[in-house]
Image 1 (spheres, rainbow, N blue to C red):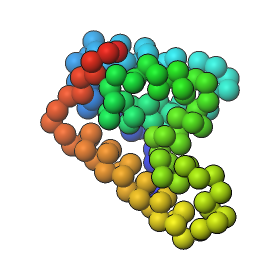
Image 2 (image 1 turned 180 degrees about the horizontal axis):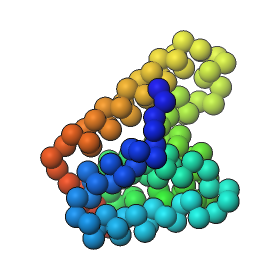
Image 3 (image 1 turned 90 degrees about the vertical axis):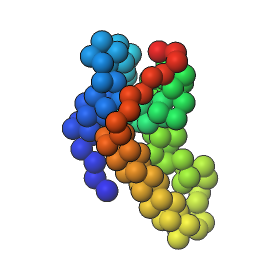
Image 4 (image 1 turned 30 degrees about the horizontal axis):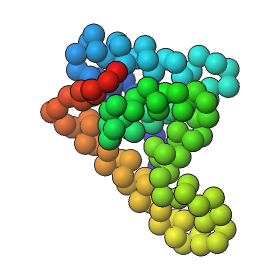
Length: 127
């Protein structure tokens, strides 16, 4: 599935942080990723940070640091938690790899739907 991360990021931010002051604080933190020329896919990676922080809010700063060190590790954790565990799975068991990718995509979409439709706000303990 192709996702429009540039469109999704502000919507997810608004849903997770409805209070403008808190949202701006999180945006400032997230802007730590995207400042360097080697920081690829800014919106996608920042959305990945938010996805991981949804589950473990106290890890927000840690996820941003991880993204800044190697965005691929962050994306593996946020988008590919099943298929990225075994880097040779695609060659060894293509069917299992495909199933994992389908499940990962479905989980990501379910998370987006949950965040964007939820009437709750996200309140990390440590930000």
